[in-house]
Image (cartoon, one colour):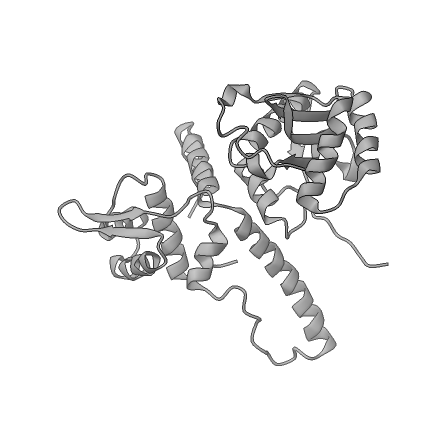
Length: 158
Length: 146
């Protein structure tokens, strides 16, 4: 998949738009994810689009950042209630920005947009979970003002 | 988790200087703001200079200024300049016992979380947190206690 490194850096910031995902975005989302993770997961992303894009509700959000007609990032999340005893809160469980479009505010625009959706859905907290080794991603969420929350993830080999 | 004195001084100096990279402050000015030893801070600033994070400006009104990248420089980067945070802990009596190994596992969990936290917070993010603390203090709420 070709990089479009000059797409945002050369254009005005106002040209960046954040909008709900559409069926035509799915191939770009699959490619963007494969570009950064090295693993192509078409079934996973198609299923996610069905549940969060095509059948979106106030509580299920799948947003695309687009520049010059091309997707350059996406974010997915939903409002979950009473899992682990937690009152309703927004969860971000996927965010990605094309490597050539990073450090230009795309991730911040996506995060602000999904937080606005969560607020409209009536929740006051946004959460995420990520690997301790995902330094870049953790730095991004920290830069958005996120901090360690009241829950700790535990696990055990079976 | 406790940081060594030199590490804390380095963090104060970097956060102070990075808050306005155009300005320069002397070691004495920074030391006075935090109530710390100017001699010790001067040594720390020289270490930060050797690491390319601050630059000494000579002449009248001279001092130090921040020359690092606030978005890229993390707390872990700064801690590593003064402490061997990644080193395996030294052998202690009882380490080889089941009790010692279990305790070591728990302490390693704590260390992992501390390391991940320090590596995820950039100087730019810290400056945002500091601005938030200032805003709270301006609203009459107490700032973080020392």
